[in-house]
Amino acid sequence: IGYRRDLIMKIEESIVEESIEHDHIIENLKQHIKNFQKFLTEDYKKACAKVAKTEKVYAELVAKNSEFLVYVSTLTILNNILFKLDAIRSVLKMYRFYLVFVAPLSWRQQHDETLRGKVQSIQFESGQFATDNDLVETLDIDKMVEAARNELRNPLPARLYFKRPDQMIYLFRTMELQSREYLTQLSKTDAPFRLLQERIKQLKQATKQELDYFQYYIDSINNEISRETYNEAHLQEKFFRILNETFYDSVASPTTLKLKICIEYVYEQVFGKCEEGHQSLQDPMKILEVMYEDYNLRLDSLDFKIVNQARSDFFAQDLRMMQNAFKAEREL
Image 1 (tube, one colour):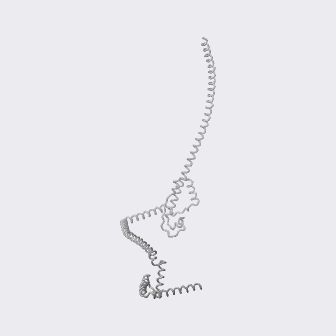
Image 2: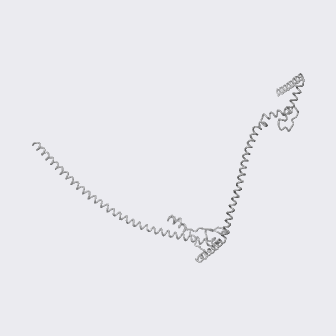
Image 3: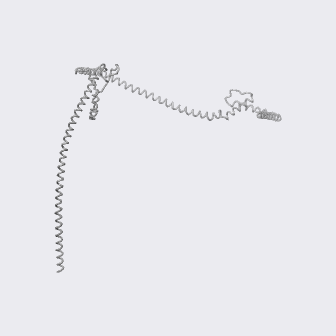
C-alpha cells in the first residue's frame, strides 16, 4: 500500500510539473503567435508599399512607352517622308539625265556637264537609266541625307532641250518608226542572214577539218624532227667520243706526236729532207721499213771486219760529238 501511495504521489507531482510546463509552453506559443501576427502585419504593409510603388513605376513606364510610341510614329512618318522625297529626287534626276541624254549632240556639248571638253566627233553613245536603288535597299537615312546634301551643295543647272510633252511624243514616234523600219529590214534579211550563218558554220567546220589535217602532218613532221634531233645528238656524242678517245690517241696524243716527230727526224736524216704531203705516219714508216730491211740485207752481205770497222768509226764519231758538246757546255 505504501508503494502504491508513493507511486500516486509521484504521478501527481509529475502532473503538476507537466501542467506548469504546459502553461509555460502555452504562454510561449501565444507570444510567438502574437509576434508572427505582428510580422505578417508589417510584411503586408511593406508589400502594399512596394505594390503601390510598382504600380506607380508601371504607370510611368506606360506613359513613357506611349511617349516613345509617339516618337517612333513621328520618326517613321519623317523617314517615310524622307524616303519619298529621295525617291522623287532620284526619279527627277533620272528624268533629267534621260532628257539631257536624248537631246541633240550640239546642245549637249554646250549644256551637258558629261560632254564638256570632248571633241566634235562624238556621234554615238549608250547609257543606262536607273535610280539610286542601293540607298533604298540599305535604308540608310544618313547616307541618303549625305548624298542629297552633296548634290544640293552644287546643284545641276536647270536646262532642258525638250520643254513640251509633244516634243517627246514626236521623239518617241520617230523612234517607233525607226524601230518598225528596223524590224521590217530585219524580217527581209532574216533568210539571207540565216543562210550566211549556215555558210559560216560550214566554213568553220571545213576550216577545222583542214586544220586537223594539217595538224596531223605537222605533228608527224615534229616527230620526225624530234627523232632526227635525237639521232643527231646520239651521233654527235659518238663522234666526240671517238674524236676525244680513239682518234685523239692515234693522231693527237703526246705519244703519237713524239713518235711522228721522231719518224720525221729519222726520215729527214736518212733522205736529207722531209717531204710534204704525208697524211699519216704509215707512208714514211713503210719507206723507212723497206730501207731498213734493204740496209740489213746489205749489212748481212758485207764482211764482218768491215762492219766492225764501221761500228768503231760510228762510235768514235759519237764520242767526238759528245766530247765537243761537253766542252761547249763547260765553256757556257
